[in-house]
Amino acid sequence: MEEVKRIVNELKSGKVKPIYLLTGEEPYFIDFLSDYIEKNLLPEEEKAFNQMVLYGRDVTIDDIVSHAKRYPMMAERQVIIIKEAQELARTIDNLEAYCKNPQPTTVLVICYKYKKIDKRKSLYKTIKANGVILDEKKLYENKVAPWISKVLASKGYQISPKAAIMLVEFLGNDLSKISNELDKLTQILKPEQQITPELIEQNIGISKDYNNFELQNALGSKDINKAFRIINYFSQNPKDNPLVMTVALLFSFFSKLMMYHSLPNKNNAAKELGINPYFIKDYQLAAKNYPMKKVSGILSKLRDTDMKSKGVGAAGVNDGDLLKELLVEIFN
Image (tube, rainbow, N blue to C red; front, side):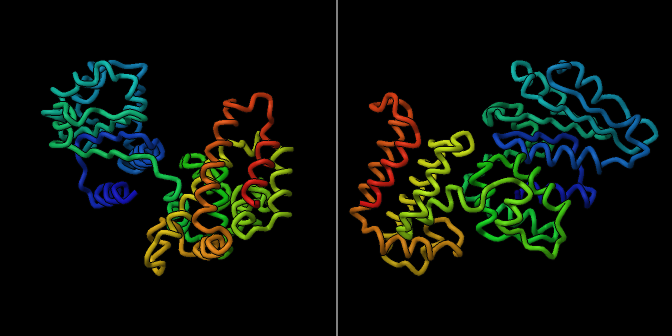
C-alpha cells in the first residue's frame, strides 16, 4: 500500500515514467493503480486520441510495440494500458527490446496479475532500470483489518475494530470485495458516523451476533450457552458459515493464545501477537480460562476436526455434529 501511495504521489508531481509493470498476487493494487492512471494522467479532451486500453488475450507483443512507438496526437504523451497481460506470459520476454529504448512520449502500463515475471530475467531488470515496478503480495488476514481502517480514514470515515474484523471474517483477504462493500457503506453513511457491527449487519448482511468472531469470544470467556447458540446457527446456515473457515479462525486464535502464554513480557503482547491492542483483553481473559496444557490439547483437537471435516476418519458425520463435538472437548 505504501508503494502504491509513493507511485501516485510521483504521478501527481509530474514524475512520469515510460513503463509501469504492475504485477503480483494481489489484483486490487494493480487495478487501483491502473485505474488511477487511466482516469488522471491525461486531460479528458486528450483521451480519445491518446489513450488506449488493450487486453492480453486480444493482442500480440508486436501490436503493443507498434502502438507504443507511435507519437501522441496534439498532446504531450499517450497512455497505453495492457490489462490481463499475464495472457501474454509465453511471449512477454519479446517486449524487452522496446523496454530497453522506450518511446519517451508513451506511458506503457502492463497489468500482469496473479503471476510474477521472474526477477532474474533481463526483461524484469530492463523495466526496473527504465520504469517502475509494483510487485504486491496478498495481505495476510491479520493485516487486512488495519488496511480497512486506513482506507476508510483516507475518506474521512472511522470503523470500530470489531466491525473491521467482521468484514475480514466474512470476506477474507479479498481486497476487491472488501473495497466494494466499503464503497457501499460510504455512499449511504455520513463521515461523522462510526461504522459499527450494527451498521455492518444492516447494510451488508453479516450477522453481528452469529459469526466466528463472536464464537471466538464465547469460547475465550467460556460462555457455553452463547457458543452453542452460535454453532446451532452455523449448522442451520452451513453455506454462510463453512466449517473449514471456523476451524481455521479458531486455530489461529488458540495458536496466538499459546504464544501469549509463552511471552516472558506481556506488556508488549499485542505487537508480539500481531493483533489490535483493542483485542488484547480477550487473550488475557482466555489465558485465565485455558492454561497452556489445555490450549495444546485444543490445538490438537482442532487439527483432528479439520481432518474429519475433509472426510478422514469421520465418514457421514455432518459439520454441525463435528462442531458440537469440538465444543464439548474445548469446554471439558
